[in-house]
Picture 1 (cartoon, rainbow, N blue to C red):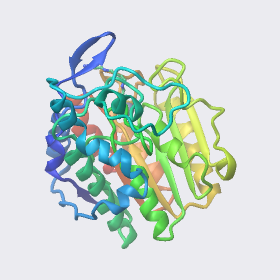
Picture 2: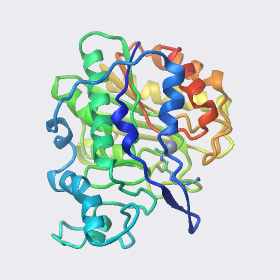
Picture 3: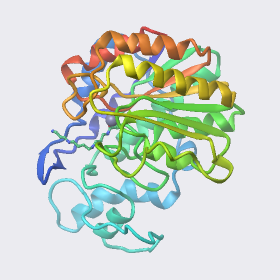
Picture 4: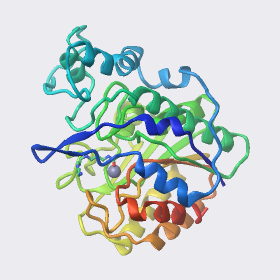
Length: 333
Ligand code: SP5
Ligand code: ZN
């Protein structure tokens, strides 16, 4: 399996995040990339597909905001990284407000996803990495891995959050759909992929299944509940399988089989996996109990679906085990 990676993704380096009322070191740091790279062997540098496939998912005003936000923050006389502090919880609309704090509130849903100087470039190359791995699968590879960072699955069409800015899995899904494929996305990150769900929620052409920590106890709280099943043309096109904290492989495996059965029923001919290693027992911000060999078992079950599969890296914060957990997963394909 080819593994795609671009080191321009390391330039995204927020210093701190808001956590439990204080600022703590940013958990989604570039040491994650180094740990994964050291474990997965040679990588292929992605091709530049330009902005068009990004703009097919993310509206231009949001993309323009992402590019400018850090410079606007500095121009306002601020230190450090840009982050919002006021959010339009009701009647959010495209008000053309100049102040950076208003823009940050309009285009984000949490206060722990700062925009640093290198954020746009890194997010851009993260999306390109996913598009290049997709290209491999579209041209005949059975599976390909996109070592993406920053992650993407919490980013909606026009909002950032959860360490995510551009939704690489959604960008790849949209590009694959445009190429005539029937796409299913399987999200196995510990956290619900609320951004991906939102992007495809009212569409019948892309299926989204997610296995994640119950949002009654875990971030992102407001999405990922079992009764969210899609709407309009997308009714039935979303499947959420929340599991309690403490879940290990014994309870995880049947949920995975249920998700794969739903993907088969949908008739997908291409699978995109949002893979997070934060389901690992020793993850510092998560509470499932999967062990390294479980990732190989997980991958074998997914591979048994027999679909061309593109894997996008999402979360995973136990850096000392991250490389082994990613390689264990990739080795199952
Ligand atoms: C892609 C992904 O896994 N995003 C997860 C975002 C979770 N954010 C909420 C939890 C924040 C915990 N911060 C802990 C910092 C410890 N240094
Ligand atoms: Zn996660």
